[in-house]
Length: 620
Image 1 (tube, helix red, strand yellow):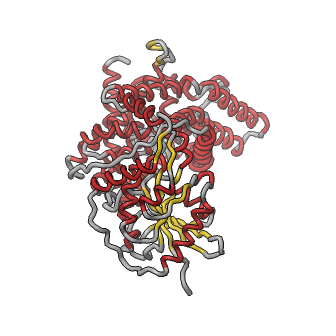
Image 2 (tube, rainbow, N blue to C red):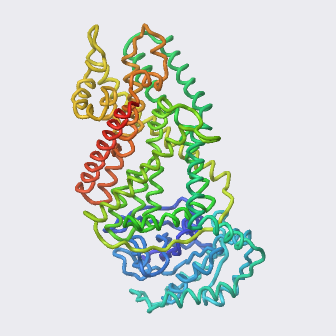
Image 3 (cartoon, one colour):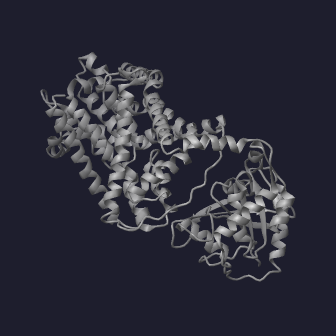
């Protein structure tokens, strides 16, 4: 029985390969790993017009057959027939961005020289036309010597024509000799020159869209104005997180308060009522109330990514990254870590140099992930006055900006030290492609925000809820006799008393010591844990204390140096089991996760201690 012919989708990053793969295969996809590496293998089945099946694989994006990362090495080896456990592709579909033809054709020319059956998918042709570029596909096919099909993958335009071309190639491949290919020697500079000449011959520019993009870049990438623009954008983002979120946060808080009152009023006293009221509603509600702030932050991140500005930010950061021994390739994983360190650490697979990659993994938890935001905003809201320091500039937003800056500074300093000690080695360069500026799609932004909200609420309903229920049980039993605080007499309280001996010198109190262990599950659990502890300890005869907001209770019992030390702790502490687990998987052992946890906890302890001691000395 003959296996279905295998066709590989190959091309530069951001050419739209994945969208084209989805359009060709639909839901008939399988995702696995290539043997011996952590590079994902994405394969699917496609049916031709005559019913013949074709196996399609979506290869990682690369710029040439000279790999600069494990992903790119897999692409090269598959294309040349060297990849273990993989057949030589019967044909290649080279996906190129029609709006960036001169850059994408260089790799296409290298692939065409391999003498494999090839069709070029001239993808995102609609975006090129919108930018005033008219591309003659027939002229391009004549220049390249292979068929060219114009496509718009996201709208399934040109898909049937592409399938027909693939079918023709699959028949042609049966008449060619297989076996491992050896790429002919290539001069990348000469290839680039040839690519530009072909692109010029096949393209006619009808408007000044590119010139406008270059004019914007003249400011956005300027050595002086570019960094100032980036700092200004980030500053506005953090101001907006506080200024725009208050009304929806108050509404959510009032909703949970009403729900808690309903439970207290309608359920009989006992285990179930206390669990629901103190452990579930007050604990989980204390975290969900921060959803508006998280969505505002991610709304800005999605907006910057979709507009094409985020890559420019990475370009400007490259010089700074090089000063601490990292390449610009590290910026994208670190940027992803602002959402969550787990995908950020997984994104380090695109970094070729092992020591560069290891350093990026080890510092990724220092970038401020969204799980820290509930902790930051709770403490800032409770202890930092909501007043303006300058017109339009609030003190609370300024402090939040400083915390994010502290995380970035900590990551850069840690990288500098690591690259000069345990991960010493040369810093390689990297190639970055600038996407075009574009107006973000409202639909895409909506989908992105919905996805983030779903992830956050799912986390609140699983990890945070489970951690909180476990903490409530441990903090509620055994029942304290009259005159003793429940949070000190309970099982959790006695564990916290032992931890308190270690953290008391840096200003942490019993409640913080009790909240730290469950926060290992996820950082935002610290907020729900504090809410649960205060709910358990609240005097039920004092309605004012029972119903007071968490921030107000903390304000009444925490000195300011303790609150500032708590913030400093969360800038550096590696309190996330998922991050530790993915680090173990990506480094193939426990040695580096143990090193990472040890140095980050030491850093957190020293930072919290220094903050507390300094604030106390200043009389704050």
